[in-house]
Length: 66
Length: 545
Image (cartoon, rainbow over all chains, first blue to last red; front, side, top):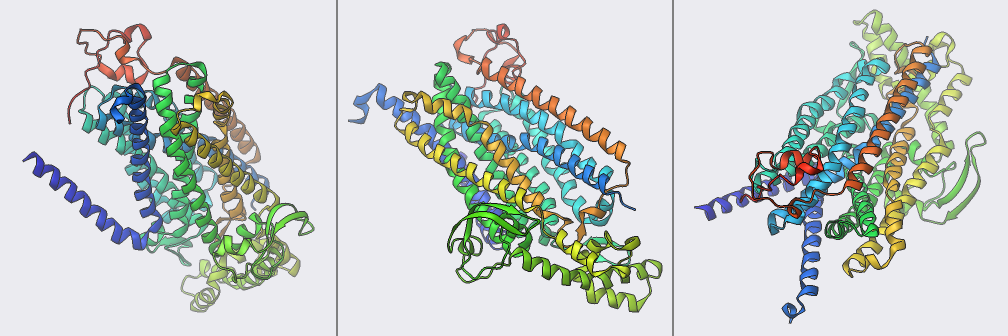
């Protein structure tokens, strides 16, 4: 049930994104670029933080990477 | 009669309050989004350090947010107190986005920021993350509605002038909010805020790295801020280009002033890399030019002709002549709204109504029917904003943007190689770079608003007739009062920020205790708890989603 809940949530999000892509992409290209770009920025920055932790772990335990 | 000194003082007052306010806004816009990135890592990885980082940067955000609100509230009232004719003329359009900003974005942002600061031990991790995202969304939506209102002033879309009520009336709300100027300006401003936050976080982190304090927080924050910053800076430069493209069509006088372009050059026109504009002589005393660059920069083509300032003045003189019958017709309609001939005359000359208002300032007894050629020529000169000021504030902004881009590229390289701490000079440079994005944002605001002159609403309502009829003494007194008060606000902000930065993050897990206090993380997160009390506070926030 929990899995179905997650599926439904992400399906809904995907629908919203597709709707926005169609409506905003035509009428408001820069607003659409902002939504996508800000999401991308957040995720990329978060990935940068995780990459830092990976590098730290690798430096502390070099055998992991072999 | 309208007093020119009062108009000038009203402009100075609004410029002063806006520029003070705009020292706080970009950091709030960017830091809220950066917090969302930090907390995302915390929720995904469960690592406590990211929670501490989020709480620390949120504390600095809170200081900035509180003072930003204090300086921002007065500005909305200034429209009514100092710009009453403007407010009456375009209130139906301008008031709508401002009202939506207050009711939707600001309330959401204010409510959610409370939950974000005080909700660490009351919400699950997932719930708190949603709240943090809503703070970021609310602060940026707030900017959106303000810039939709400002977009109308720059490129009025979605409204018509009603000659019977003598007011602008909203015709299309979608045209208002989807105006290209509003769109590009919002994204440009919002991302400029991201850059500001990235420089701020990188600078403060560099301070800790130099002092060898809070290294875990500083290294991670520096890494995330530099990635956040390099992408944001590319975005802000891209949107700057978009604004130039839009402005080339909607505000040719502003663009010509920004480029100190006096003559209409054959396409592709040269780009004035550096010049010394002389507005009296309508020429550049000297200029360093790059051939063929301006046309593709502004129009994204090689063959579109860009009008020079002298051509624009001549063209605008014709528009003033065409606008005079529109103003005359309005006068007849004000005494007899059923005058069909006057209405027909108005409709025939409506597109140039604003230009008719321009010459009213110089016409004998402010009667446009008595306007002379000299009056028209004088009004036509007014259609060009201050070229020297706009040319240089624009260039300072662009130079600072590229400086920040270079910094971020180097910072990303050093950070990815984990060798930023080997370069103390670079860490010191990062620290000293903190004021730069704030300065760049101020320069950007000046470019946009000085370039809009002589209009409050472009091509429709001149600035000279937009102000209220206060006395000079009243305006001087209130201007000095605002500048004094806001300077105190800035000093308070800097004092609180420096104190919070020196104090550093709350070390939750450094002093874990077995007791389960009810204080939780709320007081801790707010920074209000005394240091000795923090040891008694249990971190009970590791709730699952």
